[in-house]
Length: 635
Image (cartoon, rainbow, N blue to C red):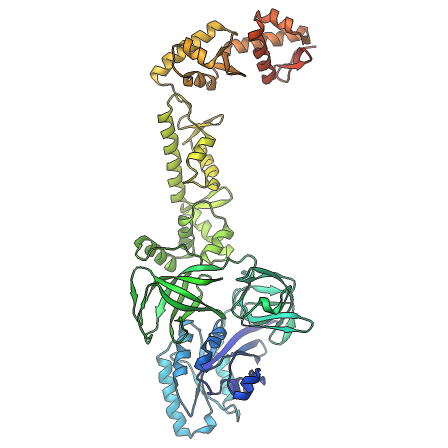
């Protein structure tokens, strides 16, 4: 269905004619419950389609006016584009009128048309007085300057003017985001023959299509969309800003309820803690202190919560501050959501606010740095908000993770990251992104650990990669270690030889170790191919311990065989050359041939031959050897 769509709601005191108004405009009696018919009052939400013009169709949500059913009223007002604030001409502004207006203000409902109902029941002079009172009341709300239309549901007086006022108020209505992940608060659940379980609500964001797989939160139940109906018509898809009735499979009536959310699989997980900006109503019954129990209303649902003030101990009526809400039950809140707070007993509406961080880490009540970070997040641009999230992250974050964390669309996060990278505030790290300050701090920590190791073991050439990773595992997540190491190597801050890492490409031996190393090399050169054990060679060179010998092996000045035997690397090179030359004239050499070539006893001969096999110079074949992959003897 093409054209524009809007959601219109009613609000006002009980028995001021809201339902009669909707019936006159739409032809639908929204009082569907037997008890509503018997008592003549609205108890639950009612819904009706309203055609306003060829290109504008509205869904009307009629809310109950009785104070006892304020919870039902709250379930219906979220997502409204326009509210019809109703006052009866024979009664004027009443207590529930003020309470409903306060809730509309807290939720930042953007447009209002005042409707002075039952105009046929009073004299014109009296109607003038009540209308004047109506305008005066509107001036005390965010709806100052809104039009007031005189109306009679019984006679139809004022209906054309009311339709005109609604059209004028909705002129320039901005389309909601139909491209993001779908998100719909469920305000009604029922079953229908042939359709199964049906949920209804106003789609806050995204598009729902027949065949889509969605998630019912907070249960996390995956469901498939069987059919979609919007504004009384069967459709293949429904976009943001429209009322929708969606049949789901597999789902029983008992598995869903008002207050649930139907969301896309890509949406963020439900939260038990959110950072918020909370505002206390000027006429709130009392000040709130930290750790006060409240009832949190969002969408069509509510849950008990604990309000924890940040940066102050008390919130006075009419004031606002940054706080955290600890929710008893998880709720899929998102940044920018407007909510209402009532007393835990649900006796009074005390305030409301806006979500800053939907999935927040707990902060201490008087943590100045955390408060400053929340204020920056609240006021910041998309790039600043993304950077704030990166600063808090332990390791690299992907676009999808950041989008869920900060409550933004992936495309918006990607644009913010591009801005941060070009400005030097963030950089890529593997398949994610980190803040530049986090990168530099982690790099400094890595380099300091390498330097500390070299100071602790000056004879060695640096630290092994595995040991460095192990030493830093509490400070650097594995997802950051490898990108950071590659970056350090790429910029020359670290140098690698084999599996070891050092700050410089060359790491000279300390003076004392260098003297011992020279003696060891002399002993090995004299011994030739008569290999020595590590400890034996160190002792013959007059050096305690094996560190210097191992460093000479690492520097390839000594060759190490199996069984911790070592000999001079030059002697090994000569031996390999002599074997290769011998294989040119004799393709297969027996042990006796090698004994003749080297003049060694079997004690030294066999380890040497096994080492030549490992190097690919020779390959064992039976009791003899033939040329290996690294040798190219002629036929």
